[in-house]
Amino acid sequence: MSIVSSINNEALPVMEHFFTIQGEGFHQGRAAYFVRLGGCDVGCVWCDVKESWDASNHPKMNIDDIAAAISTNPKGLVVITGGEPLMHDLTSLTHVIQTAGYETNIETSGTHPLTGEWDWICLSPKKFKEPLPEILPQANELKVIVYNKSDFEWGEKYAGLVSSHCKLYLQPEWSKSSEITPEIVAYIKKNPKWELSLQIHKYINVP
Image (cartoon, rainbow, N blue to C red):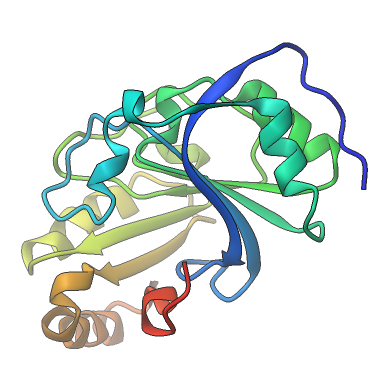
């Protein structure tokens, strides 16, 4: 399987990259290649990948090498996540991935300008740092992490700012899932524009 070369010799800090299934949101259950980039300035207190925050802790990987790793797997979904991936210019990386015939999906809090060519944008805003207004109408998916009951009202604010075609998901924060999931189910029954997202990869113990 061939993959085109990147325009230049750019490199990005990569915490990890692996082939698995997407465990949450719209693409849940699909085979997906994940590229987790280092660097985040949002600072969620409940973040489960805090080791990703400091980009300098992660080796820089050439874009061509990232693309070559992806190309050893069947064509399908590639998820760029973090950390906060939009702290980096993703133009060249996504161009190479799309040119090779893969779908590009970003998971972002939307706190930095959008770069790259995307087939799917998952926006997951956080209270700790608000998303940029210009990203909201471009989101294909709004994923609100519910940590406490006040997050429902907070999520509704963003549901009113995304496009009418944007998919809306409520997802329990993992450490409080047993407590929060019933609250989410009850909320969705009263507000059926929302859907439930569960981190199934954690239930079945895959990356």
